[in-house]
Image (cartoon, rainbow, N blue to C red; front, top):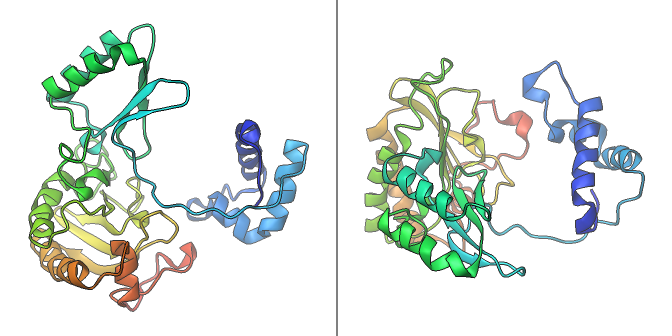
Length: 302
């Protein structure tokens, strides 16, 4: 809706939230997000309200392009000279050697540095001074904490997200957190045979239609219907700007693998340069593109 200087970003974000608080739909959970308020009133109106709260005008929008929404793994240095290391923590569950290693790293960084959780259920070891980088790396190696393309196993594993589901959540109909790594492990075998193991593909699973695992934003998404049974959605785009479309209902593990295998084979041979899996599925008419969120709960003709 507009442009702001980096120094104003947090104040603009606050103004957006205040506008949503005052004008968003508080009565219908399926219509309660900023995107629906913007759709109902229009982008120009929303910008006007944000500017009222902010107390100043926004600049005109500038062109931009999202190329990734995933996490950066491995070491990266920022302008302040500090180092940051992105680590894979499968489905955000810190256990076994991950727990031991991260505890050691926390002790080493006491008094400076720390951890940041990402929206993709991973962890970033942040603000590491150069003097401690080698020591932190030794802990990563000793405790086998995945933090590089080689140690994160596959592009799909780097991009998997799931809600907690069973046994913790009473709303869940099916497994998600405990099961998705197993399913991904089986799909990795198919991807490797197709030469796609390192290809980034977003896969997400949730245990019920409340969709805490954000499956609608994935290139491959699953919503639990019953134990071992899921609705399967395909065709979201990699950067999160297009929702996916219902592809198959009430599928089991064998049926999931059976349906995805030929699609992976076609993708390996027929994709265009730099074409993501979800975009390929839409271009080749495996599914129709989901053009608006209000249509997502309908049953489409795929």
